[in-house]
Length: 86
Image 1 (cartoon, rainbow, N blue to C red):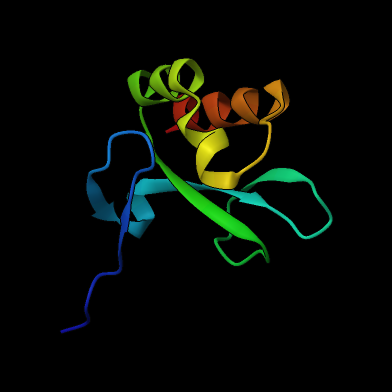
Image 2: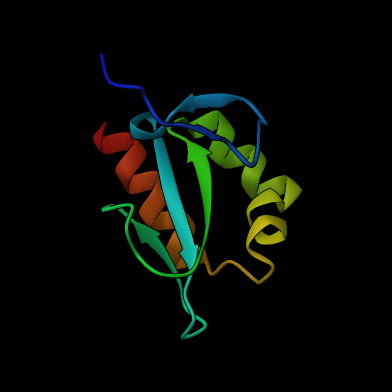
């Protein structure tokens, strides 16, 4: 039996299987992108796939703190799109 990789959501501080989270990356080129492959280079932070968590992330700035940079609105829009898509 294979071990399921677990990661912590930076907003709720709960642990989830890696596939149940979305990864946002601050790349060495100083970009902030949503990493759907989970393999991009850079500082990564995971967020739970739920609208409530996304709203909390916007209000609290947890994603910005975890990645140590400003998060553009386009990243939040992309996250919202992926969460709504399922």
